[in-house]
Image (cartoon, rainbow, N blue to C red; front, side, top):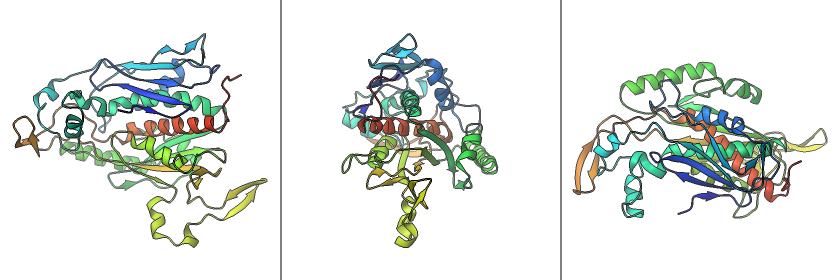
Amino acid sequence: MNNSLGKLFTITSFGESHGKCVGVIVDGCPAGLPLDVTDIQPALDRRRAGVGAASTSRREKDGVEILSGVAGGFTTGAPLCLLVRNEDVDDSAYEKIRSLLRPGHADYTARVKYGGFNDWRGGGRFSGRITAGFVMAGAVARKILNTLGIEIITHTVEIGGIKAKTVSYEVIKKKALKDPLACADAAASIKMAALIASVKEKGDTLGGIIEGIALNVPVGLGEPVFDNLDGALARALLAIPAVKGVEFGSGFEAARKKGSENNDPFSIKDGKIVTMTNNAGGILGGISNGMPLVVRVAVKPTASIALEQSTVDIKKMKETPIKVEGRHDVCIVPRAVPVVGAMMAVTLCDFAMRAGLVPRVLK
């Protein structure tokens, strides 16, 4: 098992979907950082289930508890232990189908890997519920990055094939946080919501694409060749349940371009070297180049659907139909938006520390 990420800013995830709690240990946080629950709770609230058609009916308060690493309102340099309690838990729907392998879930692979001792309730360690811990760690990382002027913004750019139009970073910052689907394009958001409602009526689900942007990233973050910045970010982002693809800058579109179209010509602006375009997405040779870091993640449709599917009863070793009951998001994309930002923050914070940009004691 490996439930930890990072080298100097290290996070260790713990808890299960239907256990007593989920949380994270953050080790390496500098001493002297002002920190209390109000720095973390807003990010958790954005990740919580909403009231729209996209969201699950499971309602967790997700009130963050800081158990260690803070005294007098400041971090002490000791490990932070952050958690939220699981209170709205219902195992009944999972008990009914305990021996049935849910299509699209990790039931089969986890059962084989852990000899059947894995927590099967709600997916256990493989549930999106564990991302509450990611978000808490991300909130701490963001506070550290703020001391360097690094800003991270995330938004929904596509759901079910409906694409948002390209808008400025200022518009994203202004509108995405207020939109129920975290989309900065109001017209596209309305169409997405209508599609989600239609798909929900049919018992099906939807996926989409989330874009993350890091601004004011200094030149030089990344440790080639095996700890390159884009590789580390991809690893962190692919740890988010339901994420199936990651691309930077022009991404897969680069395969359809000529070099003359995809290269980013260099220029000088206000005495600094910049590029005139940003097809590289802010990373060259695995190292940040000072331009906005742009990454997009593909989120698969929620695997739990109400439609009948074919599966196997692993106890009887017999093929059988299955209909997955319970409380599930029709589209997980809006709730995953803050998770993407959190994992970007955690990774960038670790690399900033490795570059010597963050002191052990903040003053």
